[in-house]
Image 1 (cartoon, rainbow over the protein chains, first blue to last red):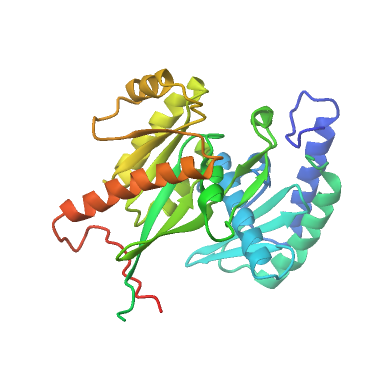
Image 2: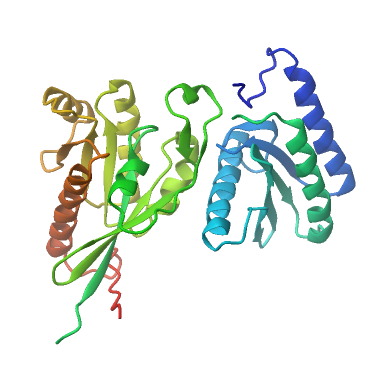
Length: 137
Length: 198
């Protein structure tokens, strides 16, 4: 059973990290103005990327908390699988998208960004990442 | 016949990774527990396969007048989730510090969590010495390591057992009720939610 964590020393891990980074770059190009993008495991460890305003460890943990609680809410009210959480604040957005069964994509965006466009592109990115990253179990 | 009075008390269950927090709540909750457990992906996986990333929530009712409903909020144990400690501790009237007495390597972490919580709220807490298995020496050593004041109780327990888990919660409840009675009425202090149910 392989861990999701991408260690630079592990065989072939560099290529996976690079592949994830490429997906994040594509997302950034598709939606101009994004402030940060971060991929984390569902138990809150950062894989690739960072988060403006806080350290990446805390950002990864917060994204996983949103994912975990959102998933529980979706299940309890019988609305199927969790997809995303939008935290809209006076000065911007922190949006978390589920990456299959293995993790979460967190995006920090300013108020001016088109949320519809972000959703359209980031959902595609999350789906592609889900196929890219091997599951923990 | 007069309607029964209900009071809801919010308590928090905290402690280090793998101490037994989710188990305590799951063992005694009378409602299906809301849990946010997810697979562990790093080295900690060798100690435990799943961990809480956001919160647990369960409830237990204690008969009496008023009927007391204990709303139990479980925290994540890993330090990177400490922002959830701040969120979940809001309005708490007491907390359980859950510690694995069979694993002294986690005791320093338990002390750090207790120090964090002491700042969050001046409320009573009990130390649940989990996985005691009749060992009297370990709970004493734990008390010394945490440098606990005499009034803070250490409750030896094994929270996979219902009776044992209830012992922990009742010990906390007694201390919480004493603290509420002893406290002068103050608008700023957290007070029980007087939910006149029904």
